[in-house]
Length: 287
Image (cartoon, rainbow, N blue to C red; front, top):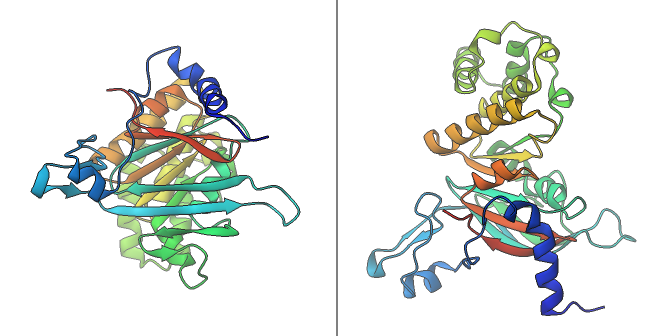
C-alpha cells in the first residue's frame, strides 16, 4: 500500500517520540541544500560541521568525504530490500547521527559505508573511492574505521598494548612509527596507565575506549560508532561519548554514530532518521 504524507508524519513522530520527551531535537527540520542552492539563497547552517556557511560571493563549502547516491541493498536476491533509495553526504569534521528503530537499516547502512556490504543498486564513494570497486576497497577501509557494539568481539591481543598494535602490524607500519601511534592513540582515550592490562578485565567503558584507540591508531578520516554505547552503563557511555567528542573537536575526525542513545544523538551536528530502510528525515539537533 502506498504511504500518504500523513503516514510519513506518523512514522517520523513515532521514531522521534523518545527524544522529544526530553527536549526538541530538530528545529523545524532545516533542509540540506546543494552548494549552489544554499549559497544562492544565502542560507546559513551550523558553522561547526557546517554543511554550508554561505554569504553571497564568499561562500565556504565543507569538504565532502562520503557520498551515498540512491543506494539499495538486500541480503539475498529473493529477499526484500532493507535499504531503499537512500542518499546523503557526510562532510569533513562533522558528527552525523543515524537513528531509528531496530530493523530500520541503520547498522546495515554502517556496513555499506566501509565496504563490508555492497549495494545492488546505487553508489557509495569515500573520498572519491568507490566501495564497489575491488581495487578501491582497502583505500575505503583505511579511511573509515568502525567501532562495533560489543568490544569483546574486537579484541585479539592479550594486553591493551598488543591489541592496539595488531591493526598497525597488519598494515605494515614500521616499528618506531607504530610505537608512536600506540602511545598517541592510547593517550587520546585516556588509557595510558592500562597498556599492560588484559582487555577482558576492563570495564565496559574502558573496553570501548581501547577499541576506539585501536581505530584511531590507524589514522582514519572517519569513525563509525555502530551502537558502540548501547551495552554500556551510564558511566561507561559518558566516558565514550566524551572521548569521541574530543576526537571530533580537537582532531577533526568525522564521526558517524548509529545510535538509540539520546545524549549521543544530541551531540551530533546533523541527524538522519531511518525507518524500514528509508531515510525519512534529515536535519540538525536544536541548539
